[in-house]
Amino acid sequence: MRSLDPLIEEARALADGQPVSSPSAHSAEGEVARVLQICNACRYCEGFCAVFPAMTRRLEFHRADVHYLANLCHNCGACLHACQYAPPHEFQVNVPRAMAEVRGRTYAEYAWPAPLGRLYQRNGLTLSVALAAALALFLILAVALRGSLAGTPAGSFYDIFPHHLLVGLFAPVFGFAALALAMGLRRFWRDVTPVTSGQPVSAPASAEAAGHVLTLTYLDGGHGEGCHNEDDAWTLARRRLHHLTFYGFLLCFAATGVGTLAHYLLGWAAPYPLASLPKLLGVAGGVSLLIGTTGLGWLNLRRHPLHGAPAQRPMDRGFIALLFLTSASGLALWLAAGSAALPLWLCLHLGCVMALFATLPYGKFAHGIYRTAALLRHAVEKRQPNPVGLGAD
Image (cartoon, rainbow, N blue to C red):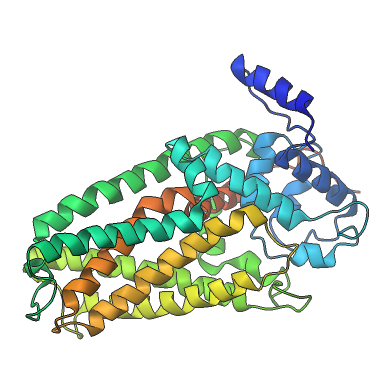
């Protein structure tokens, strides 16, 4: 059980407006500091990912250092399977779990508004699915009251929902998600910049970080054979499924952008013909997203029990579920074109998309933003002289 003394001391410092830089030994940040001090003495995993080279530039691990390192971690599990001090050793070194515990806290700590971050942290899966279902039901009832839910096959989406109504519904949700993500990123960047040399971002550092983000470099385990899932075997499955999910999401986003431009510049009305660019991008992205999220959900259920933080799993599964429902309902909407079922699938798809955007700032997607920022700060920091020079001899 966690002692009350450090909590009281921390609470007093926060009440007095003083920064709490050194994590309590009993906190999630304190556990990361403990295991990294052991790792700093061993350094066997130095080549695995960016976490360990960044670790060797530090002798102490304050809260901002820990938040930065936790968001550099990809939770691939390679260091756990290689560690001689991992459980059942008495040192109980479990870097992936310790980092995951802290990452889950950073989602809520940097979230804007903070209460929404804490709500999603506790009820990720339930909140995601319930919100999608509630929004879809609301849209279904609205269409049913107009008498156009079933019967005559619909032609254009705008025969069901006028274009200005769709803009009025989605623009505030999308704008709020963008603002909340920007505010969270601003808070994270403000905290980690001073502990990562404080130097400005350069073009070479930006290019290196972008390469790591786009290729998911560190999910290759540091040696190209991949990371771990349910056992000691290497696997590239997580990296490939992450790629399918990531690029599927980008293709779907591009389809929406191209469709919006086509509407305003060319007067096109959805649904578009199969040979059109919005449809090609949307179908390719939807299929990629569906395969990727199905695989990631399956791997999530089969993960090694020592990987990750159990408290964070509902949040992870909530994000995977929303992506899956969005892609599945989008593909079903495509197949329902010209049929009487089109209004129903349109309501279901719009409900899933709206729920996805409303929850983006508070879960796994936010971690993608923080991880990108952490990789960028790592690319900046590694170009500076090592302040401690551990291992220089």
